[in-house]
Image (tube, rainbow, N blue to C red; front, side):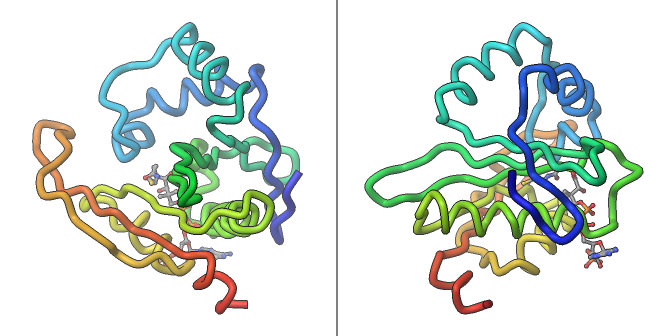
Length: 174
Ligand SMILES: CC(C)(COP(=O)(O)OP(=O)(O)OC[C@H]1O[C@@H](n2cnc3c(N)ncnc32)[C@H](O)[C@@H]1OP(=O)(O)O)[C@@H](O)C(=O)NCCC(=O)NCCS
């Protein structure tokens, strides 16, 4: 369990998968995450077995007063550099724009740099996702590189922006 000011991060359990599946199949959530194909429960269970059960992905549910509102994840770990990729979403739109996502991302950064001793965390964000870019900037991510027209989403190619934060940068914020 990881505590933020108002949010608590808890391990994503298999029983949570139907809820996350519903969220990811909502284009408002899934498309900005790059999910262009519909998901089904069997594929989601396989992902859980392959990545979550083996700690290849560290996945927490974001909860507020016991309610599961979204997900924050670290995966694609690279060693010996100690780099991982961050992704996150708020699935229940009642909880958007209240600062919960930022709180969850901050808590995950502390966990990643602290408990996991990562050196660098990055996020892949699509250019047409200003909220996510703003959120990443607000917690200390810097834009590192742009892959032009790299992703095909909703009938158009979009730039993919890699944003990164170093452990040393997080330490400086304290
Ligand atoms: C990107 C995403 C997670 C952002 O969620 P969100 O709920 O808007 O995020 P937050 O509420 O933490 O964002 C902070 C905003 O809420 C505002 N806010 C409102 N109340 C707040 C409070 N009590 N405390 C802090 N911020 C608050 C902030 O001022 C900030 O606004 P700003 O962007 O104008 O600066 C969400 O839109 C989402 O899930 N999108 C789909 C998936 C996605 O794009 N994921 C990221 C891909 S890497």
